[in-house]
Image (cartoon, rainbow, N blue to C red; front, side, top):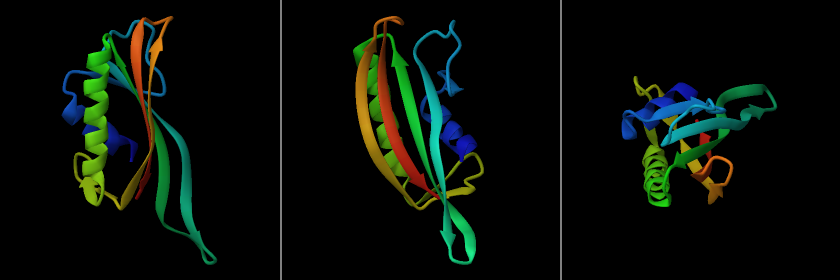
Length: 124
């Protein structure tokens, strides 16, 4: 799922650097950081079945508020389009459903950057 998510982000943000879990200190904005917060496997009384729910957080880092908002909205639109579709370079991950858990915006004083935060759970 992670490769598919990264691929889809790269399609809407060509040339923008995308990092898993954290960005290097010398990263220049704009850039995106994504991380997996949790994974729950589907299970019945007979054991695990083919299905997962994975919660991700995507952080969009921009030099200006407008830049961050534009990118955050593009991520939200991407997530809406992913529902009931196959994603990834080979379209080999079927997204059964997706919940948008929350969206937030903050200014990072130490970095001097605007951060858009998109938290979502994908069901595959």
